[in-house]
Amino acid sequence: QVQLVESGGGLVQPGGSLRLSCAASGSAFSIYTMGWYRQAPGKQRELVAAITSGNSTNYVDSVKGRFTISRDNAKKMVYLQLNSLKPEDTAVYYCNAKLRHVFRTDDYWGQGTQVTVSS
Image (cartoon, rainbow, N blue to C red; front, side, top):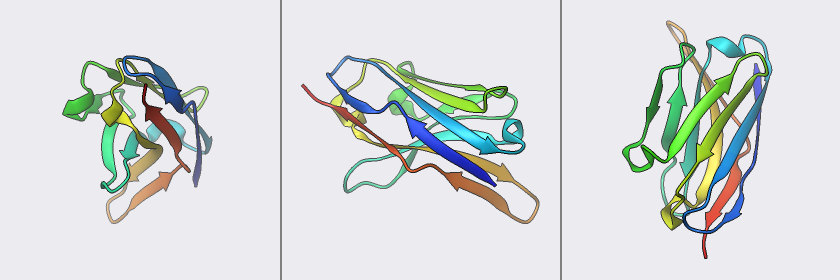
């Protein structure tokens, strides 16, 4: 079992920055693929960025060059640095922990943190 708690959301002007944090509890954090998803009103939840146990990262095209995902296994933390924010980045951001097994996938979610980009 993994419990996830996000923090760091808020209201920011276009062009501004935020740093989201996700604190994990439970065992074996380092072997999970960690991801940040977002869901805007009326839209489906989408994967924004992910980082594997080997620190490989991937990003949705719309945030490449602006967002950076990182993890600290010793602290059981994952971060998302959001730079050059745009109004279309407004959404609830969710932390996710995923571990694929042969016959199942363990999938855990945080409660979400609101990011609002507006002048």
